[in-house]
Amino acid sequence: MTTDLSLLPHAAALPPDAVEVGRIADAWGVQGWFKVVPYSSAPEALLAARSWLLQPSERAGKSAFSGTLQLAIRQAREHGDALVAQAQGVEGRDAAELLRGARVFVARSAFPAPRPDEYYWVDLIGLAVVNREGVPLGTVRELLAGGPQTTLVLAHEVEGKPRERLIPFVSAYVDQVDLAGGRITVDWQPDY
Image (cartoon, rainbow, N blue to C red):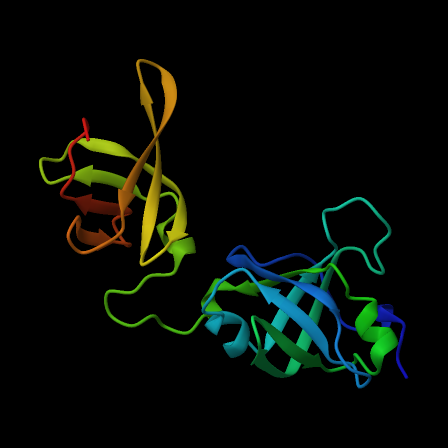
């Protein structure tokens, strides 16, 4: 049984397009499987990627490894509201327990292509938002999932003071998403 994670391959650094997509909650079973809590309700990136990069939890406490650990994923599948996965070199429950709390990253280039008119949230963060008249409304800081729709959270300033603006990310208000141009055009006014 392998319980020494130093025997697994380590990456020198995260690739520039690495996206944090979940964390390892705990070991699952006795054959080296581990439970992963995805940050997305649709964890296609985790399920599609054959290589995950792990970094220790940012929480205070002793971690079983340091730096970046690269895992070759043998299998991953949904299990309730989480995922369970098995990786090459993680043999037995003891080895899987050493991964507890680890942050899971996947290279953005490994994400499956989204369907037309669908976007990964990570691709929208940082885009400039303007209305139909070209008036700047802010920059996407984050997205919120709430009920049947997602909401863009924009950062902008009013008289030099930081403010927040919320715009529903639905076709009634979003005219165009131009990822290459770094811009979202909306039917929204600054005084809404």
